[in-house]
Image (cartoon, rainbow, N blue to C red; front, side, top):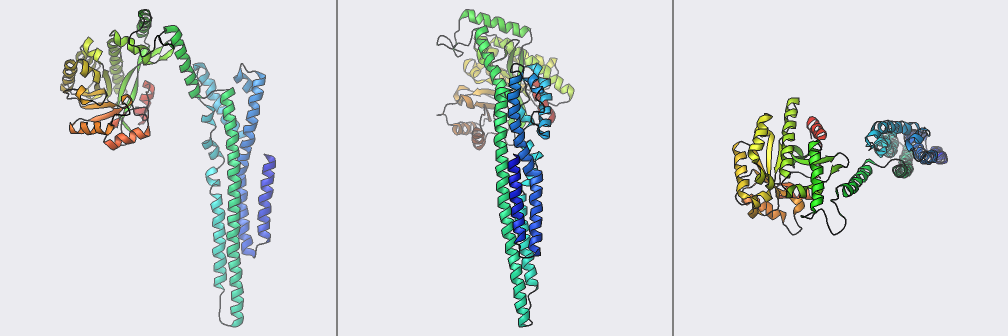
Amino acid sequence: MKKILIFLSAFFAAICILLTVISPDYLSMLIIGLMGVVVAVGFGIGIIPVLMYCQGFREGLRSIDRALEINADYIWTAITTTLPFFKQKQLDDMFESYLNNVREQKDSGVVISDIEDAINEDTLAIHSWRGVILQIAGILTALGLLGTFLGLVTGISSVAFSSAEATIESIETLLRGIATAFYTSIAGVILSILFNIAYRLIWNIMLRDYEMFIDKFHDRIQPSAEEQIRAKQYLNTEKMIEALNVLRTNSSMSVNRTVADPAQEQRMMMDILSGLNHGEFTFVLMPVCNLADRSVIKAESKLQWNHSVLGPVQPSAYMPIVESDGFIAKLDQHLWEQICETIREWIDKGLHPVPVILDIRKTDLLAIDVYDCIKMLMEDFDLAPRYIEVAIDESAYVVCHDEATKAEKQFLQDGIKVSINNFSGNLVNLGETNADEICLNLGSLTDEVNVENIFSQATNAHLKLTCEDITSAKMLADIKRYGCLEGRGEHLYGDLSRAEYEKLMHYGA
């Protein structure tokens, strides 16, 4: 890096000196001198720091190798013996900040802070005045134009035609002014091009060294937070296979089977009952947004099982079993109670929450009096109807239409909004309904289904149609074009924990 710095400094110094020496007059020399000052400033606050970052990242690669040689089993201890890690003050300060966060998070088992959070292209750009340096090429060109206009003004102002001698002299002055004008423009363009090429070349070299360092750091020292989470989810799945014996890789059984081995079901149910008794079942919330501005207008509650050993358990691992034997109604009641209690706490804190949607399945309608259950919870926690909405699954209208419409009518009479979830697009399945809205499940639709036609049919039937499972920008753009006003999905917000959702309410979406 020192050789590159010396070469570039000598090169630009030689160019500036040469342009100054061959300047046609003092005005040109003055303009070229100003250009030289600008180039020197660019070197001092832009190119030199970037070259130092290059040197720092290369030293960081060597520090990783040294740390692995010292103690590959206790890498964090080894890293502390290699400090300063980059031997470059700004990079070492950023790295020290990262290490402090790591020390606080190691006990959790997942280091959430990533090295890229502390050291990234944006941070490096700020510390090396990249926004200013990118203007230097334009400043050099502008100085060239300034010299052009000054040269022309100087030449034109001396034009006189009082005599032949005066005319000849003024023409000579005008030509000298024109020479100055064109010379400074050419010099400004030359320096602008050369500086721009040099800076962008050095910046890209630095980015290459940065990426090489980051890749090696993630590979040998600390995986990124996303990689850790994926690895943990994979291990959880493996443990689930071993401990619960539910997820099989052979053809004899899969998660999608409706009939499982009775012994396996029994072991799973014992684990579920234990989890319920020990508070392992909680909830997450998926915000529902106004698609015009993506503001949060309500949230759908979802059941979550945080196993004491395995961590979060995917719903596909246990939902088929609890739904087949009706135990899902018990879990849903537990969820509804938690939600109502939480809303009460939010109100007491002054958070003014948007409505939370309680999902109602066909099993709930067949097993319990859903209306009485939710109504009692709202009374126990003193909740007004505006804080709760209910969403009845489409399958309930197919399997037990009378129970679904009865519950629908009772909730509507109490001022509680009712929606229909997991709508497949077939209005015939719903029969007669007075629900406030119907939520189309985009993820369950096949390629042959024409979503625009579904919206057109809903509009003709005077039904409000919203969407769930919005997973891409294209999907969002399409449904907005069809007239959809509200929706939810991973593209807008993922599932949020209670703490994350409270922060969203506090600071605003």
